[in-house]
Image (cartoon, rainbow, N blue to C red; front, side, top):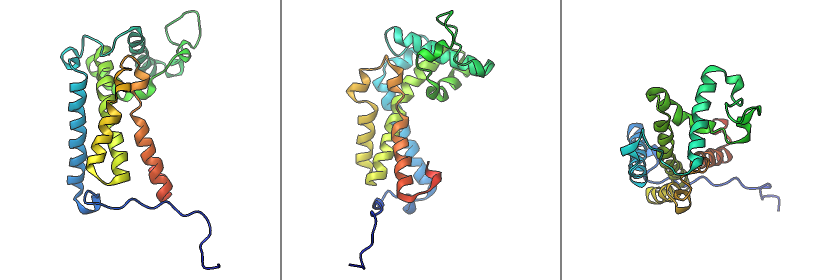
Length: 203
């Protein structure tokens, strides 16, 4: 049957809905997403309570792992600001060389930790900022991914809440490497957009 097209069909684009940016002004569209992010930050403040009351004095996690992670983040900032080429030569476990290579480097958390640490000089405040915002950013990314797939705000908000504050996540508050997984939904969103439209800018 020569009239049939060959090859695998391209994935269908998601159906446009009433929340599509093509039907709203850019300002209103951005405002809605900023409002959603602020809502997730408020939920994060509630879920981590009383973290804000002791933001610069107590770590938002328990156990020795939290203290170790605090040192790693502070060392990252110090090393990158002074001798970036010696980032992995941490001042720990002497005489071992490249001691930071034996643990997590947490470079992905620095965009949150470093500004707070630089402005306040308080590593505890920087650590707590990561704990607080990791849930909010994870929820925001999951909501964006769910909205992209459904074009509906209700499922997007539910998906964000489930991803940001699932019981498994709350039970790992002392393991920062598991909390800072907020980039994953946004990575999937960009990958899906690329596979649909084949635009390199989506990556």
